[in-house]
Length: 75
Ligand SMILES: [Zn+2]
Image (cartoon, rainbow, N blue to C red; front, side, top):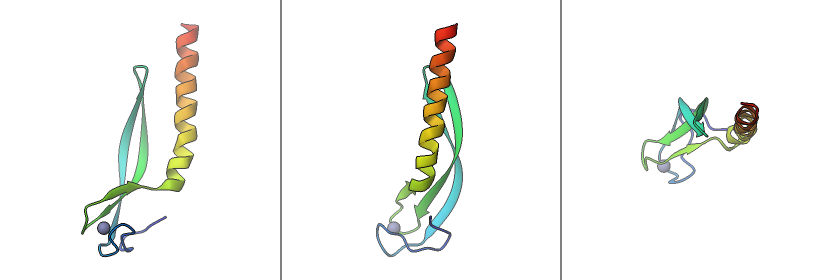
């Protein structure tokens, strides 16, 4: 959605820095690591995620939770 050097949509002054960071989701003792795109601003220091990417990850997280539930039910 954003790229390096884009204007910060929160303060309108800073520029966006794009980073990829591993984020760990835990569910019933199981963990899932996702590579997330994180935007941060050099002026206001605000950090936020990519909405489009988060939407895609929502499905991945749901599938993961379903797998964990299935696994626990069968054991
Ligand atoms: Zn900003």
